[in-house]
Structures are given as structure tokens and as C-alpha cells.
Length: 167
Image 1 (cartoon, rainbow, N blue to C red):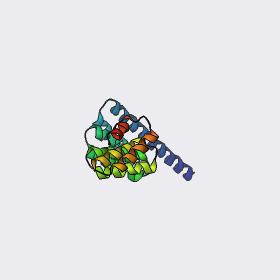
Image 2 (image 1 turned 60 degrees about the horizontal axis):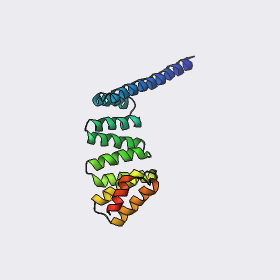
Image 3 (image 1 turned 180 degrees about the horizontal axis):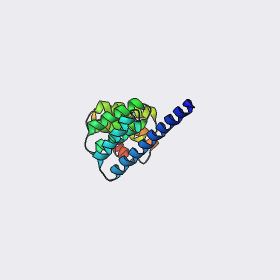
Image 4 (image 1 turned 120 degrees about the vertical axis):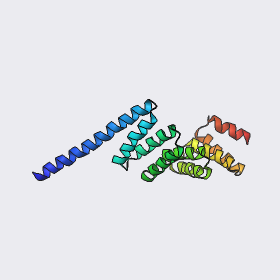
């Protein structure tokens, strides 16, 4: 009998925790749709406090922080998210974009290379790598090679076509 009661209490605690997470995500989503990014960030911070291994909360909070202009905070959240889920190309891709934006080119290049290792079908990762190679004044052959990979995956990538013609 005592075991049954403990199982029921534990089971209801799990249900409560899951429903609380769902409610918080709904609140964060509503705030995000209304462009109330600070409020959404606060709610996502609650999710992270309650569920510290919730990688989606870190990813979503990174987006809210970037929308508020806190690129460094967004990068920090994506770094935590990558620690929890190191096999998600999306995490590296978004962090690479933010590193590129903050002119942290070597870090951005590393992240785009990770994207292509995880998902070699991501045309934009090859394109952004080519852009970074150009900024870092790498060999034009390497840049063209990356652009060819991009265009092989996505033949109508206009920016890649334009950059390829300029080289």
C-alpha cells in the first residue's frame, strides 16, 4: 500500500512538472508572438531553473535575447544548449551566425564547419564558410570549393551564385 501511494505521489509530481513546463512554454510563446521579448526571456529562465537540462529552453531564450539586442547573452545560451545537445546542427548554425555578427570570425567558422560535419546538406553553412574565408583572406580555390558545395545542394542560392561570379 505504501509503495502504491509513493508511486501515485511520484507520478503526480511528474505530471505536475510536465504540465508546468507546458504552461510556461505557452506563456513564453505568447510573449514572443507579441514581441514582448523580455517577458518571454523571464519565463524561459523559469523553465531553465526548473529544468536545467531543457535544451529547447536555452535555444528559445537565445532567440529572445538576440531579439532584445543581447547577442553575447544569446551566444552564452547557445553554448549551454550545445553542451546539452552537441549533435544539433541548428545550435551551431545559429551560434555561428551570431559569432559572425559580432566579428568573431574564427569561432563562426568553427561552428559552420561543425554544421557541415553534422549535416552536410546545409547549403547555408557552406555559403557562410565561404564568406568567412573571403573575410579572412583565404585562398580563392577554397572559397570556390565551398561555394560549389553550396550550389550543389541548393543550385538556386542567389547569394552563392553572385559571390562565385565575383571571384
